[in-house]
Length: 324
Image (cartoon, rainbow, N blue to C red):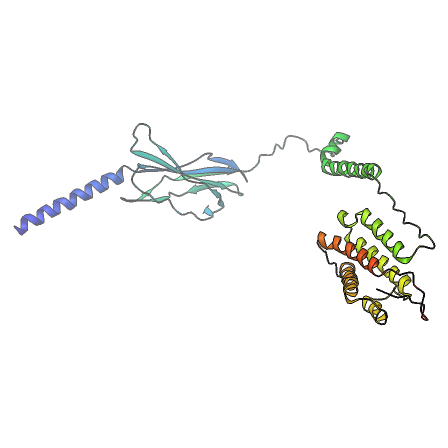
């Protein structure tokens, strides 16, 4: 029984080896050159082709930069696979190499080894002939020709410098457009400040100026800082004429120090201080009040001037009339 099992096993191993070897025999390798004769420095193609069953795998040789002495590999191409039209079960894989040489002579390229499931297969041997450039010694030697004069037209210059020309045109058009805009844009109306009429009471002059300032709508047009500068200047001028104190080139705190001994109600003092402090924040701290605050400041200024206007009463010894 053991002898029979041994015989069956031996037959199976021999059969598998036969099938494996038969599969390997179906693989064919070949090496060829696109040109077998080149001049010094020229290039040619080396092709390694493997004809094999589609399901089998082969390993191409890993070549260094130099095939043989003085024959170099310039570039390694990608493997190209094609299917055999007569037998779809077989394919041909071609690996290409670009080679060159800079020394004349005849060079023998040895066979390449290709790894297959059945073992290593060798390609055929190749011969590359590298020739020098032939010189015809029967012809005379001529001088080097001088450079040819080539005409350079305006169109040629325009082609070489079209980018700068285009930029120049854009700049010129921009300047023309800017000039046109500056000459055609609507001019701002010149506001002539009302000349102070002599003999009018300080509160009438101040209220007239406040109303003119409101009609100019400075803060509505984005000129918030200018609005508060003029608003505070009108109030400072009113205080100076109404209470005979110096307000110009003084801070808000200094103005209120001057008003300490003057009879002004706490409510009116608060209204005045809120307006002047907010004006300082806009002028010096770039504060941006909301539209209701802008309008409220104008209303409060008119309210303050109206509430503190001078009555027709006799002056006291210090020249200050009765206050509200």
